[in-house]
View 1 (tube, rainbow over the protein chains, first blue to last red):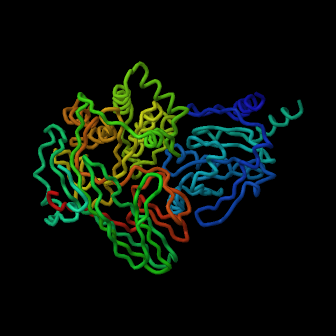
View 2: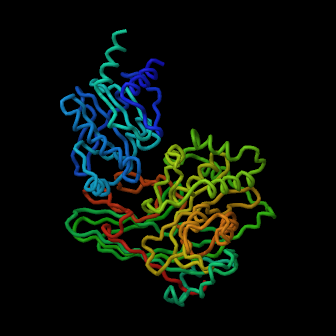
View 3: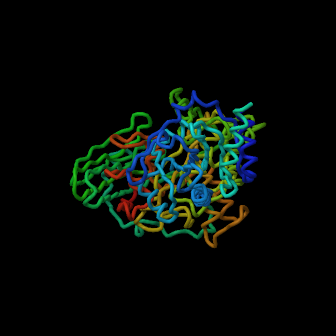
Length: 173
Length: 363
């Protein structure tokens, strides 16, 4: 219950969730970390693992090139990166069941400044329990999931510093 | 009348597709497929991967369906400058040609023949058809993109509430899809077929791989065997429906999946709610209402019948392609991979494949 309450509080602090989105309870951290670990490549073959992002808060965003809401959400995530540059926030997008050439073509039309990895066989999406696209997770600097949002979220109203503040208050209780 | 593989291969009266087609009836005529006349077709898939991409592989679907009353797959042959072999998927029996090249231009041309006829099931007169337990289990199971729990089960329960027979449940699901979904023109290819995502989104737009997969998922969630049938349109509709046929002998982008539901006594019953929505969107003058006579005729026919202007490749989901980096959700398009990864099967111009069809006269 604590995690469900925290997720709701964090969303509230960050601004209203888009009308089509909702948050759900998150499993406790630690035990799930190994299951969530991934190492994927982008459309150019460059590898990135979740562990490479430790030490920063991370938004992990699952999407697909065919997903219409995703087309609006990726630029919003790009703006989030731009305004969070000095706040230790990383964004990584994961294209689910896509082929590299299609992702490359999509990114030529919708360029973003964060890594876009490819989960060709859905293995990572399955491990993370993703059942609909887009789905996003916000992780703390220790790579524990603090927030999950199914469907589109208004990232222009998301304030990662509030998430950290809320986290600190929770931990100090 | 029956047709065996030899009959298909012996068909010799090769006619250009247009010449072989009967004069199209006006679209105002009823859409009413009726079995009775087998037709034979030849389909040629040519695939090229340009030099400079190193080693390459391709997987090209060929006709794999053999159903006594409506479809006979003939042999498939090929020419290539690489090596190739015919492979059969162990789970569903889907067949495809697997080709490999070490380097240089990769070229393969696969020629397949098949025979088919209309289907029309008399749903007022059940027979004695039963389904083997192994098939029942296979065709009520979940696949990667067709879960049978969660929102799919909840939706199925709502749609079928109060229905007392599988026939009634199946008809309810068919009608629910016709009334509540729509054909989204912007959807790439035939759609992805992720039915849980479709339902969760609340935007029930898509194409055949979405909408007919939704029918299959809702049926399976109700415990009724159902399956997608992945294929491609090969000829115009003789009922004059432009939306329900191939517009020319080049059918590269004419892929279409249909669906079947198994009803005790009746056997596998053809359904195609996605094509009802296609008629509504695309049939001239376009954007037709549900009560338009053209839509009414298609809606009535496509629960229990379909036309013979279509090749059925296979029923397969989650196909593991030998040597591939990842499985495919379904095998309806040619697939290929190079060192750079899988090519985009929905972009046959950059991928460079073409598919052509011609009728071989009456089978």
